Amino acid sequence: MKPISLISNTAEKSVVLSVVVPYFNEIDVLPEFHSRLTKVLDSIEDESEIVYVNDGSTDGSKELVESLPVSSSKVVSISLSRNFGKESAMSAGLEHCNGLAVILIDADLQDPPELIPSMIKEWRKGYDVVNMQRIKREGESWFKRKSAAMFYRLLNFLSKSDIPENVGDFRLLSRQVIDHINEMPERNRYMKGMFVWPGFKQTTIIFKRYARHSGQTKWNYFKLIGLAMDGITSFSISPLRIATVLGSLIAASAFVYGMAIVFKTLVFGVQTHGYASMMAVELALGGVQLLSIGLLGEYIGRIFIETKRRPLYIVQSINERSNVTNVQSTVMEKRA
Ligand code: UDP
Ligand code: MG
Image (cartoon, rainbow, N blue to C red; front, side):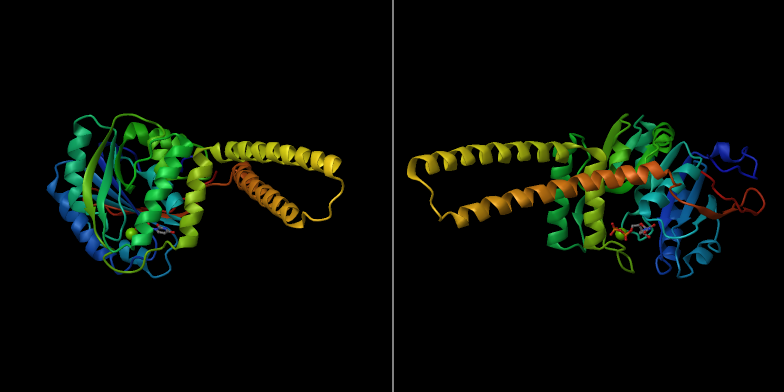
């Protein structure tokens, strides 16, 4: 259920562009980010709003955002009640923005705000999704680049979808696509896949992704493996099929091997040796069984999370500031 706004909707209707910025402890970079972003937004004709989503920051980022200077665009500050993760923070932003075109951008200046006008240009040409593909991942290790490339290849192979490689969350989405994404009920939100799923007209702009302006990435390999598992299991059931096929192949070979042993015993009599081969077979079977059970568990875990139907996030407060209307601030709570 959408929160009931205490502010009249008339002003919001005219918003053409919303820029959604999820952030978590980005106090060092937010002032620079905001000044670069507002400079770009001031230079374009369209009515715009910046929707900052505070994903449970503990470093005073929220207070900073709510004191940032307001120029031509309305500044909305949504604060979640705790850290829900970037995917949920983005969902919160997408559900609370009003623009006809929406741009998702990271706060750490890895995605240059200066590219926004060229993204809008593509949208005006009639594209619903403008993907931003990076040519170079500056400041990222060889291992991270290689593992990311392998992941996308595996994901697209398994899910038969077309999730573009090297495209992060930085992109433009039209109102039509946003409305469809907002209607998707799943709790496991693998956004990179969800942006692609509705379809519509897509285009890609290639850009150079910079190193983080300051601060640390919020991802570690453990979290990235979790995200990769989410990506694969929420967009494909191929791993289950592979487990079934693998299981059948192994069962079939075990049967053949078993027949061979019986035949050998009948012809040549009982022989005591064979410990090594027995162990090898046993271990292989055990391994495959454990792997398959783990795989089943991954899917059951997801079913478990989906059936609880908890809200994706809880909004603690919303603060809106603009130069056109008077300073207004509201506190709302999202109830599922
Ligand atoms: N972020 C967030 N919630 C989190 C983790 C990250 O809102 O739990 C924000 C973060 O502040 C930044 C963006 O998501 O604006 C991208 O995060 P990060 O730079 O850590 O990811 P990377 O660029 O390494 O993929
Ligand atoms: Mg980053």
